[in-house]
Image 1: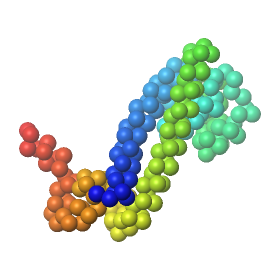
Image 2: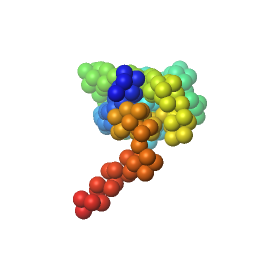
Image 3: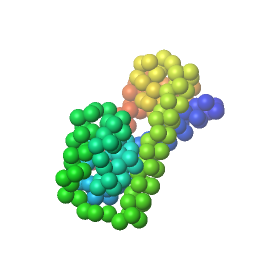
Length: 181
C-alpha cells in the first residue's frame, strides 16, 4: 500500500467516525439546550445551524429584534429568524444558570468547530480522490470510492479485483447477516 492510498483510507475512516460523533454530540447539545429553549428544536432541524444558533442566542431572554439579522445569517431565511425570535419571547423553557449556559455554549462551539473540520476533511478527501482515482470518483462518487479503496486495502488491490468481487464488497455485511441467521 502506498502513502496516498493510506491517506485516503485514514481520511474515510476519520470521516465516518466524525459523522457518528457529530450526530451523537448534536443530539446531546439539542437535548441539553432544549430545557432552556425547547421550541428551537422544531424550528431548526439542521444540527450545524442549531449549534451555531446556541452560540449566537445563548440566553433566550436576551434575544431582541436587533438580533434578527444575525439569526437570519445563520438560518438563511428572514421569516424563520422572526419565528425564532417570537418563539424565544413565548418560550415555555426553564431559566438557566450562567454556569449551565456557559457549558452548553462551550459544547455547542465545539460541535460547530467539529462540523467545520468535517467539511474541510470532506474537501480534502474529494480532492485526493479526484487526483488519485478520477474515474472511480466520477463513476460512484468520492465517498463510496474511498470506502471501496479502504475495503480493498489499496487502489492497486481494488483494480485487480474482478467486477463480481467489487459487487460483493458492497454487499458483504448483508451477505453475512443472511448467512448468520
